[in-house]
Image (cartoon, rainbow, N blue to C red):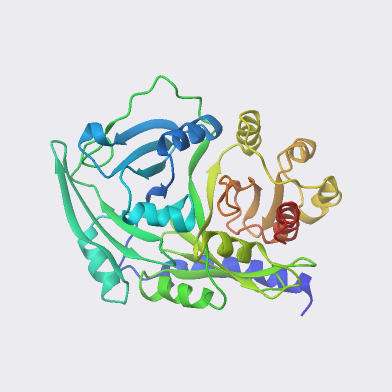
Length: 387
């Protein structure tokens, strides 16, 4: 089968899969959306300043010594519907220090908003999930929150958050974080999807986990020849819950002439974990422009990418020269088109980065951009000497 026919088949399968999603994804674990994402970091105070300054997040909530927390400190940032929690240890030893020593800064918790955290724990653990947090009721004067949690790939965990009986700022134990320094938001609205990298031959295992344990359905699959350059390749499948609010692409390495970005990630993260967070915007040009002005670095896309881009994607609303100026990638499926751009790694280790995405109807994940994207990543790998 030719590459062109295979790409068209993938697009058709994507549309078909999305239409079947509600019937295939089981409803034993109804998810209302992503509640928060928590990173374990070496210095939460400085990390919070970075995400505020560079990405336009706002001060939201705080927990630490001043609130009676003695082992850790957490700063909560918000923008649109996104809540980012940055947590650092205050004492030697323990889980946080061990996680940072092994992985560096990185995502520990992908918290999911649910109506019933006890039921979510029961339904997932009886289907084989490894428990992380038994259902726990946390209370203060503003009400109560119930949280429970399970392990997923690597040391990443999902925490189920039930907050229907809570009116506080974030969670019990947190207070409102007042700060005079709140740079303007850059237009980030919500988390579109989060991508996990897993080891060799582990993709199907974790897709099965999300299907059987969490009731997700697979909406698209990419083989190694779909996502390949001259030197490297990977394979990916996208899992989604029934209402489509939570989507997790899962990547694994594939054989290539040189070390792929997934292998590099696994080497430096020392195991599976979250590779990138894709955040949605309604105006990617304005968002990317604001981020560039604040020092965010993006992957370089050569001008030749745009030579025949309109022949491939058809008519778009945006000025192609403006997209070219910012290196914004374009792709189309049967539902519409999308615009996307990827930052360089935002951590010292070449692990996590951020994707900015604007959907103009498209529900796919930019398969037409993979080659350009991975060639851009390979240029960074070559500079690091890890290709």
